[in-house]
Image 1 (spheres, rainbow, N blue to C red):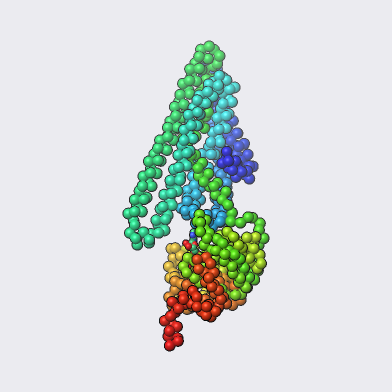
Image 2: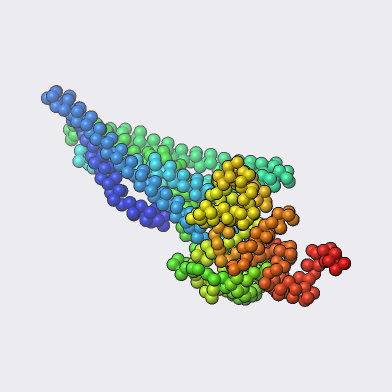
Length: 579
Ligand SMILES: Nc1ncnc2c1ncn2[C@@H]1O[C@H](COP(=O)(O)OP(=O)(O)OP(=O)(O)O)[C@@H](O)[C@H]1O
């Protein structure tokens, strides 16, 4: 019922077009019932040896009716297919928008294959239903109603008899359809699971080859395929049985009608022409159920697909709508008594973290692996809400402002740089499509990439990413850096931005970064302490707690964890210096 209501809501904006389609279908229905009536009249005319001139008139009448039927049915079908496609596009866009608003926790707990399957295969099966079954079904239903009305007016007992046959067929057909629908839902879940496994295997091909787990992956896919196949065969068999049942009733109905009709003719209640006209209506009356049975699989696939798409409409949103925007931020950040644990876990990753960052300050965050550094940044970006505590930006609680308006003013460079399968220019301008050519060149120069770009045959138009030029780790990070520069963000975050670079490249990128820092609030996460040595304040995060805090010199003089780490990383260097 909910499914039905939701679907109706999607069609509401297109009610005018639907009404037009319905009118066309009604007109086509009228042209459907005239030919069998005329056929009956022709039979009676021939048997009574009546006026032969009327015979040609009736035949022309039948031909004209068929012509108009086809014209109106085509207009109706086209209108409905168009509306259906509009509705499907709306649905897909709504699901897509919802995904972009949903909390990050959804992405960490939902397989990517499942999301893609819903937005592609599920939408496709709804499309199949829309393009082929629904427009014809409307014609068939209207045709069947018109035929039923015509039979009532010709010889009502025939109409009652057809109704009884119809109901007898509907009961088993309904029960089988219910079963097929349930099976259809399971079948789609199985397909989505296979799709997810395929996608994961392809994405992790390097890992699979390195660990030589091809056989394991293949066996897994084979088992999934075998289960899916045997289940699909059962579903198809049951679906086909429904269709055969429809055929039995469709072919048996004329026999029953002829029995009743023959008796009525013998008693002189009706003419032979009348019963022939009634017989002519049987295929039209049975067409909707036959086509339902024939398209059972398409329908049964589309219903769970619709359900699966609708599930996405109900996903929670990251934030409520219409929160105030934050513009032109200065960059004051206050993190107060932050507690956080990831969804579906029961241990806090951050345990009472407090940190005050003044606009324009450079803060370094260091600490042991798994200490919660990246998590803190994710919370700062509003990607996860804290369990306790709060974060303010220029004095405004992050929870109470539209996070996207804040994120637009933050530049993040992390270890992972995602490149679009497009030109270098498009990849760079992704952060700021309105940047001028000069800004683009300046940003690339600041990131130390200009020389490299000029050495490329296609310069800025070189395709990079998935199917283009493969960039080294250092080049990728510098592209990410240039992107951030193009955005002129008042807040910048570097999360291990230089960790995958060799010493010489790191130095170059580091000096590019340092040139950007003055005047902006900057947070640098680093394992190599030398990266944050010059920061205004360094925070050592250990197991979700700020263990030490101060400048490089202050922390060294504490002779605590920072000192230990520093000595471990640079003891050789220090020894040399002291020596
Ligand atoms: N999506 C997640 N779901 C559950 N736990 C997570 C998730 N992401 C991280 N964690 C856990 O949270 C803890 C902190 O991780 P985080 O990535 O913040 O540490 P980090 O200090 O940045 O580590 P590293 O220096 O190794 O990058 C770790 O114990 C990690 O296992």
